[in-house]
Structures are given as C-alpha cells and as structure tokens.
Amino acid sequence: MQIFALLEKRIEAPRRMPNRIHPYLKALSDSVGLPQTLMLTSKGVAGVPRAALVILAGTLSTFHLPMEGVAVLLGIDALMDMARTSVNVVGNCLASAVVARWEGVEFGDRAAP
Image (cartoon, rainbow, N blue to C red; front, side):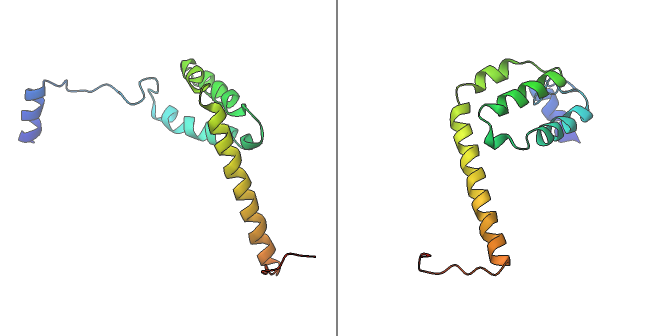
C-alpha cells in the first residue's frame, strides 16, 4: 500500500481516475450492451455492401455516442468490406465441405466427369 501512496504522490494522480478508455460509456450496462447490440444487429452484413456503416450509425445513435467515427471509417470501409466478404465466402465453403464429409462424400484426386 505504501508503494501506491508514494506513486500517487510522485505523479500527482487524482484519487479517482476518469474513464479514459470509453469516456462516453458511463454505466457498466452500456459497456456490456454495446457489443451485444452490435453482435445481434450485424448478422448477415457480409453480403450487403456498406451495411456495416448503417448498423454502426444506428448503434451509435441508440447509445447517444458521437457520429464522427462513422465518417472516419468511410475511407477504409471498402477494404474492410472486401475482407468481410472473403471471410464469409471461405466460411461458407468450409461449412459446405464439412457437411459433405458428414454425408459421406469422398473428395478424390480426380475431377468429376
């Protein structure tokens, strides 16, 4: 305890530090509710271009957060959209291969005639 007291005196830190990570999320329910809302509303986003921006804007307005972050994301959203789509396609192909294997389909070296 004495070490912390000495450090506080040395750096002159206030007793209660403000929430610097998420200054707009004051309550614990906001910190838990925001990711849950984003997870629930983002289902099916990979197939729709620019849909992530709409979902993000809606979630930010729901939690009364500033909308300037959406404008910052406009520049990289095209690249992120390509990444989301490629991950979605790979996941769908992998799921199809797993289901085919469960059904007994054998993948051989030869191509089908």
